[in-house]
Image 1 (cartoon, rainbow, N blue to C red):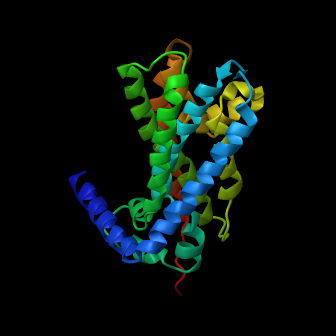
Image 2: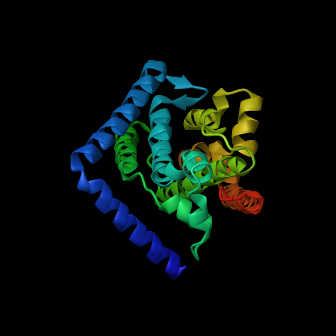
Length: 263
């Protein structure tokens, strides 16, 4: 563990130096991502801002759910760059052989060789939205609720990563430059709103098949309405561990199926 933490720190420092070498490019990237999130927030206001409640959720609660959803998503976006580009950069261009020659797990290298540090701007915006939503909540959050939210950020980022590791692993069998990630990525938007507003199929899909509901909605809902959603809170570590078990199993099977691009 100490070795991997040290490696991560060196990956982080090296990539930070590279990104900050061109500071204006970095700040423009931060501004672009922040503006995209602000436009998404504006859509939420246009849809829900003029209503008293949606499926029993007040606008303040909806705003809180949206703000919280940015936190695990921003952490995931920091480490997900190579997952989106894996098939093209590593398999089709033949860079994955270099990864396999190093005495470190291949998935660790893929996740941390390239970081998107500008994605942390969404976390700052998410915290700002939470602070704005706080006065409009039906009741103030307790200390335990904040611990629930902290656990939700960690588990949510891990769930997102696990799901997309599984999708990335498909590239070992089907070498496609785009892959199947884009359509699944769009489902993340559904997890930012109360699952109560969807039909039964969508709720099952986002809870038990692609568990984006556990990445965002259920932790925030448990912080707001503990008695109603406490059972999902107990399931959160189970879903996280199961997601990573499936992800690592699929990745390792893909490694065994991998054929080098050499002669």
